[in-house]
Amino acid sequence: MNLKDIQNLIKFVARSGASEVKLEMEDIKITIRTGDSHGKTDTTIIQQVPTMGAVQPQTMVQPQVEAVAVKPAGTTDDTESKYVTIKSPIIGTFYRKSAPDKPAFVEVGDTIKDGDVLCVIEAMKLFNEIESEVSGKIVKVLVDDASPVEFDQPLFLVDPS
Image (cartoon, rainbow, N blue to C red; front, side, top):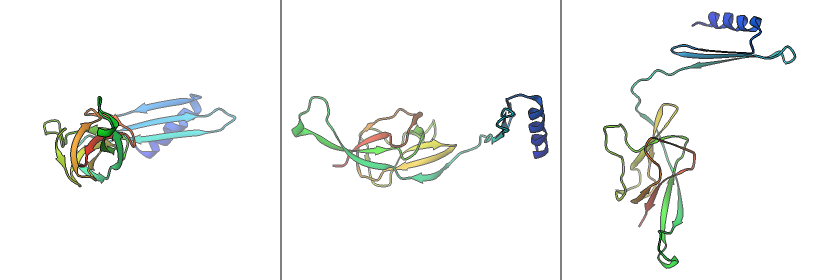
């Protein structure tokens, strides 16, 4: 669909009196909204649908690290351990593996060092490698594989000692 076709479609919708028209094709989505005669508004939203291809990790995002006190069940304040929480730096989908047939980047009990890749977070079809900023041992994975994550959501607990 070219620009002239889109312009003709906008004119047709405006003359028809419809308040909103949505058109979806293989590679494009178009939404045309027309306002009432008082507001005199025409809104056209054109969205290119990305084609699926081989997507490789392209961006490295550093996670935010914050020290928090976590008390395991049945312990007293004297034996309270200090863990570091690695949080999501972006909104997206959390993946523990680079591909479904590959092993997880890290498992509980693994020793990690600064710069090790812990997971990937997919955001807008880009796979962002999340690297550790601390060295230590993975105590707990706080998010399930292929789950959506929010900005600043805890992902891992690391024992830095």
